[in-house]
Amino acid sequence: MDAGSTILAIASPPGPSPRGLVRASGADACRHVAAALAGPGAQAVAARTRGIHVARLADPPVPVLVACMPAPRSATGEDCVEIHAPGNPALLERITDAVIDRAAGDARRAHAGEFSVRAVLHGRMTAAQADAVAHAIAAETDAALGAARSLEAGISADARRAWSDEVADVLALVEAGIDFTDQEGVVAIERRDLERRLASVGSAIDDALRASEGAERAIHAPRVVLCGPPNAGKSSLFNALLGRARSVEHELRGTTRDAIEAAMPLGDGTEALLVDVPGLEEAVERIDHLMQRRAIDAIARADVVVACDDGHAAEENLGHGAVRDAWDALRGALPIPAAIAVLRVRTKCDLPVAGPRESGHDADARVPRIATSARTGAGLDPLRAAIRDECARTRARNAGTAALGSARAMLLAEAASALRAACAEQVPELVAAWLRTALDRFGEVSGAIPPDDVLGRIFARFCIGK
Image 1: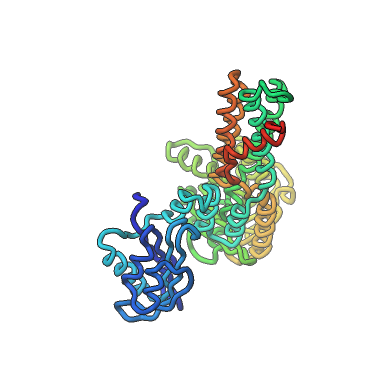
Image 2 (image 1 turned 135 degrees about the horizontal axis):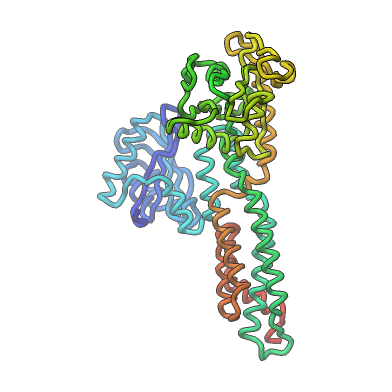
C-alpha cells in the first residue's frame, strides 16, 4: 500500500440514489481531479482553491459539485477532493476511471480503509478513532451504530486523561532526578512513592479493561440463543419467531447439526441475532461431540438464552438422572455465566404436558415461564416482548463498556504493561524510557503528550532557571 499516489473510491452507498460521491486523496489529488473536469470550476480545483465549486465532467458533460479541501486542513491531511454527481452507479464508476486514466499511472482505486490509514499517518485521526470508524461501518443495527458513536465520542476520556497526566507527572519527577539533581530544591521521587503511584494507575487500567470485556456485545446486535434437549421444538420456535422457514423442522432427533443464525426484528427499531443450536444431550458418537461443542460455544457467547422444554423432560437428559425439567439439567451441565439472561419457555403448549408419574414431580412445577406454540402462534408475542426487554437490559448494562474498542483496549493494555515494567526497573533512565512508552500508548488513545510538555512540567514544578 503506497502512500504517494492519489487514491479514489466511490464513497456513497451502492445502488441508485439522487446523489453519489467520488472521493480522492493525495498530494496531487486536486490536479488529477481537475483534469477530468471542465469549466471555471475545474480551474479553481486545479489551483487548490478551498470551497465548493460548480463544474462539469469532461465526458460525459454532466454538471457536478466539487468540494476542494487542500492539505493540511482535510480529513486525511492530504489534498482531498469530493465530486458530487447524480447517484448513477455506472456514472460514478466512469468518473473514477476518468480521473485514474488522466493521472497517467499516478492515481489508483483505494484499498479498504486506506482513507482512514492516511488520516492516522498524517495525524488527523488517532488509531482509536479509526477503530470507532470501523465499528460504525460494521454496525448492523441502530443499537450497534449508537455504540459505535459512543466509541467515537470517547466515553471515560477524562479518566484516561487523568492517567496520562499522572504518568507524565511521575516521568517529570524521574527526569528531574536524572538531569537536575544539582539544582537547589529539586528532589527525585522516592522509590516507594513511584511504585505506589504507578500501581494505582495500572490497577485503574486493569479495572477498565475488565469492564470493557462486554464492549463487543455492545457494538454488535445482541445474541439470543434457543437451546434445550433434542426435539424440544427449538427449530419450530426459531422459524415462528422469524416468521419464515429458516431452520429445518423434523420429528427425528438431531435434525439441527449446526448453529443457525438469522436477524430478528425486535419491534423497537432494533434487531437481535437469533441462534438455533443442536439439541443438548449426552454425546456418544464423534459427530455428537462436535454438535454439542457448537451449541455450547453459541451459548457461551449469548446475551440471552431461551431455554426450551416441551414439558416431557427425559430422565436420561445429560446423564443426570431424574430432573425437575430439561433446563435444570442443562443449567447444571453448561458453563453459563450468571450475567447471561435466561428465559424459560414451554414449547408445544398446544400438546398435553407430561403427567407427574413420568418424572416423579408435579407437572405444574415443571411448566416454564412462557408457554408457546409454533403451530398455533400462542405465546409468541409475549416471548418477543420478553426477548426485547432482556436485550434492552443487555444494551444498558454494556453502555459504559462501549468506551473501549479493540484498538483502545490493546493500547491501554500495552500502557499498563509498560507501567509494570517501570515499577520493576531500578535504573532511572530505563524507568523513564518505560514511562515514555506508556505515554506514547496513552497518546494513541487520547492525544499525544509531546516531550516539550514533559519538560514544561519540570520547569513549572521546580521553577528551574529563576
